[in-house]
Length: 254
Image 1: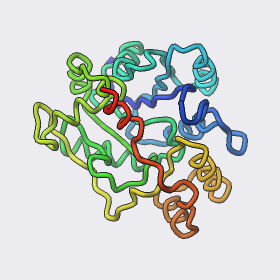
Image 2: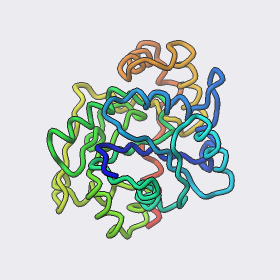
Image 3: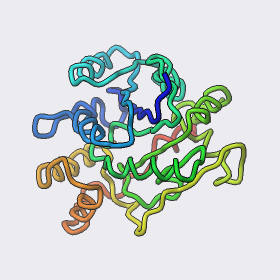
């Protein structure tokens, strides 16, 4: 079945820095549920799939996601590129566009997701994101790419970092990076908020997100959360954590 846009969010309990982080609760709701509830407000998305792993502990994610009436797929823990591709195949859909987000970003803004999707469609590029040039807060990362690009990457990517992180093969072989065969474009941000963190990798990140939700709730825009962090110096809570540490670690291990 052909559809327009399929969003896949990756989730697992086996985080090394903060195990079980996506199932930690704030005001009675798991971070993963907060994340999915926000994403369900996207207007450009035709299907949402949670892609988790076949590890035993991730049956918890599978069961919870099903109880919340979202689709879930279990695949390779380390070959996340294959997990993404197989998730689409498992539901017998062939989207024109795929959106990649991660479930450790509970406050990802659905309106921002829609903006990046529309940007990709208007530019008609193979890959578009708001992270080719990092100016949005960490935790508001959105990647949009054609299914054809995902399929090419799935067939050809060989480096560990390219399999573990889904999109490096596409990004690194794009015209944005001086390569071929993919075209790419960056969705811009007027100001540089790249030092602000709303992702949850460590306990300090969780404390900041907990503070945001207790003070502002779960339905604000990315900019409202960002301004609140800046105005109240909350970036002191989790400042100094390296952005994309997992990806950098993969590269260093190659």
